[in-house]
Image (cartoon, rainbow, N blue to C red):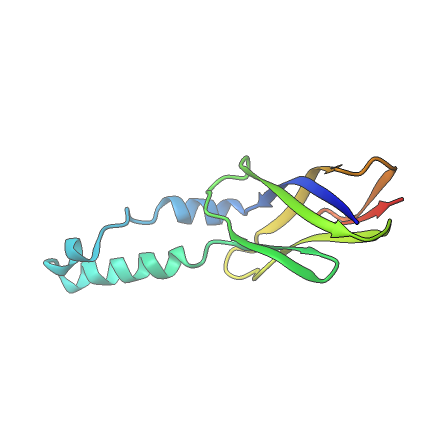
Length: 140
């Protein structure tokens, strides 16, 4: 039995128009801030909270097993999330690593894997990029 650690960075390719809209959302206020206000303010509060649910999300899979799902809350393409996935395998094999966009709507964000490395494996590792969000990792 081997314990290995896949380490990689996840970057988001967020369209500029989505970043611009996100930056123009009102500052979130509490329900009590709006309670004494008008129906218009309540409407703004409701719109903000519905929009905040629309942040892009991604899922990390190894082979076909879901490992995690994350929301991308940053309004920048220069931010990355450092992932660290621990796996137990019985013997050398090829593992498919994929970062999948949960829903392309509303902003059509795509995610990509960069800076991939394996720790805990002393033999040769060959990582073939299938697409920018998918790798075949051959542990020999």
